[in-house]
Amino acid sequence: MSASRSPTGVVVVGAPRRAMRDLYHLFLRVTWPVALTAIVVAWLSINVLFASVYVVVGGVAGARPRSLWDAFTFSVQTMGTIGYGSMYPTSVAANVVMTVQSVTSLVVTALATGLVFAKFSRSTARVAFARHAVIGPMNGVPTLMMRVGNERGNSILEAMIRVAIVRTERLREGTTFYRMLDLRLARERSPAMARSWTVLHPIDEQSPLHGATPESLARDEIEIIVTLAGTDDTSLQAVHARMRYAHDDVVWGARHADILSEDDAGNIVLDIRRFHDIVPTERIAGFPYPRERGA
Image (cartoon, helix red, strand yellow):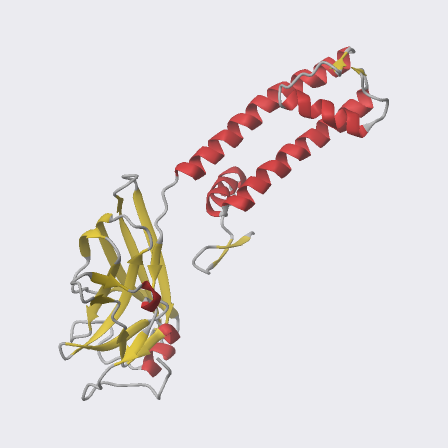
């Protein structure tokens, strides 16, 4: 039995391990400093391993007997195909080790090149989600609102938003069931998402959130999952992003602050500094509001 933690925060127990495939995906997910550090550490470790073998077998001209440092520098020259000529193998054993190391160097270089290229060519979206989802009136209708923004100066073509909720249900049989329900959006597709997009879900009679209260969201352990997918108009590669809002990330009786305005010259001004700001809204008759919470 093995356990691992997925990016969604779910602990997976008993899943079969595929070490090389898992390492590949891990390499693609980590940051560049971590990835490059891992390559350097692996490369140095291989050289230390072969240097230890050279110390044991000997037979390297120009290297001091039992000197790990000299053996290490010779190993580095071999791995890097440098060949200064000051050190070279003279015995059969040293030549065999050198041959094995040369083949290993080819494989390691090919793997490192492929990993770096795969990570470098992997197109990722720089999509920002507002820290809070909000519920407030939109034309008199209670509406769940989430703000999404493109942090790059280009556009995401044919951007598509999907929103779903996951809630915990206690069945009559006494078991717990985690149900996922899609939320219908006022608009789920944008031909070209440039900067900001406010995603709207009207909470009407057909909505799974109809009749919900802050207390019921907490009781049912509601999570809101937002996914965005589209095509980067620069690289022409598919990009995607995801955000999860817990029930306590939803602010009731609020809306996202306006970030678009017009200056005196008639230019449209986009104030990114207010991207995460929310402001209170008027109260809707018959709609539940929580006890006062800072907006």
